[in-house]
Image 1: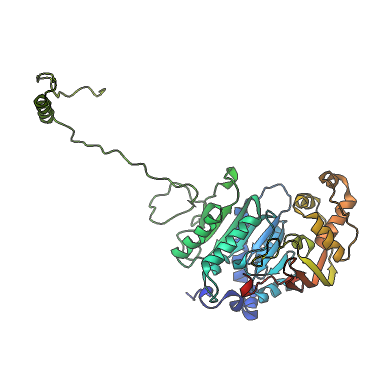
Image 2: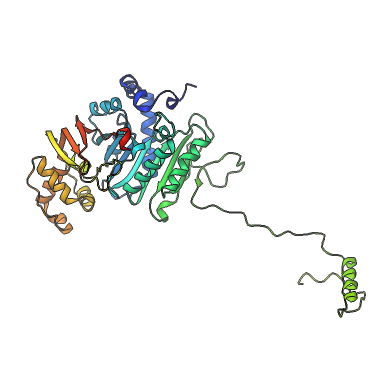
Length: 291
Length: 124
């Protein structure tokens, strides 16, 4: 398996003219990106009222995902750090406006103006410290903070990511939560290394019916049901906003206290000077379960 | 870059309290025809900062917009206004020029319709 692009060079260097051209002319990549964008739009759960919305495409690159947004009838603004990739988008004459910018510096958008945001295979780039002045945590903070602000109330952000490892996954999640987002992770095809795709579905504003996270897709393309067994892998949806703490179980001592113990205790009390009923054959007899 | 996007953009420079709106310096404006969608216009209208939008349209060379933001009810019926709104919002493109931060005066150049919003190391 070839090395991850994130480990080779910073995105504005990695995605130079050659790579940009390769990225766009490869039909396989185009197909995958289109599928990812369609799934992300699906997860965005925009109201089905035929009203075009204004969406943000973070890391829009050469406009592959942007074209999917246009096909679904919405307006969009795209942000990318690579001039080469944006040039390809220009050539394709995409409908959305393009911005040359670094998401780790903050999005620079006015509060509450965006109806939804998607990002395909881009946010994991924030976890790499490419320049000495870059501190990934500050960049993640700036990104999620500015994203939260610019989204309208009740809007969602769906970020398809390729975290390198669990630590990166946790890092991205924690900064999203800190910024005030609620939501969870949807994993499609969790058991397949090749097809496994992870989407961060983040919601702004108070939780409501619209914030329930959908199920991830199983191996055969069907939705995973909730009660799957095994549970050795973290499967389908992991809801972060509510955690179930295990209730402390009361200790049940099966042995109980026998007749001997009761008699001993009664003797103890007598010695103390308490008034204790006399010992009879009925002492410590097993009572009906009603007691 | 269309005025729709310009109306959303704000200067992100460290220390700036209000980076909105960015002043426009025009070098080249292009008009591109786009199909009108009334639903979209009605949906986006409440989010538009009208003063910034009006000033920007003036700078881009379009003087047909009213200075005062009309009542939302006007959008339901006044097709002529919707036409003008649509034209200024989505059909005027700033191809070459610059966006200027209102507080620091720092220029964000616009080339081939793409504003360069990358901040320098000391501005983050």
